[in-house]
Image (cartoon, rainbow, N blue to C red; front, side, top):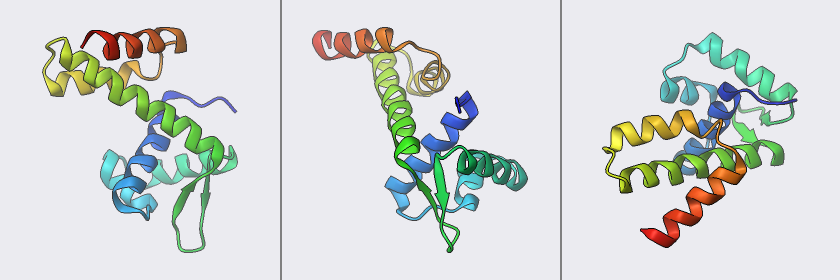
Length: 122
């Protein structure tokens, strides 16, 4: 199952929340993303059926290996691109917003070049 941008965003959010809080429930995703409970519930079902998350008996959301791979990749792209844009002089709010859009469509080749350039030239 190929994930769409929204699926990547949900996985990234679960990843970030798990780093921040440890235990993540659907309501935490609702609050973090500002989406409705039904929308998040539907998305969690799709991600569960796709093998990206499991839902524990206590309602906790856990990333599978496949989900963790997508979440870590998306989060890395988000943080690296945000930093890159800020080093170019873009204000933080705009840099983060633009990185959030670009992280889903940038090719691996281009991202590797940005990452290399960021390490070498800044």
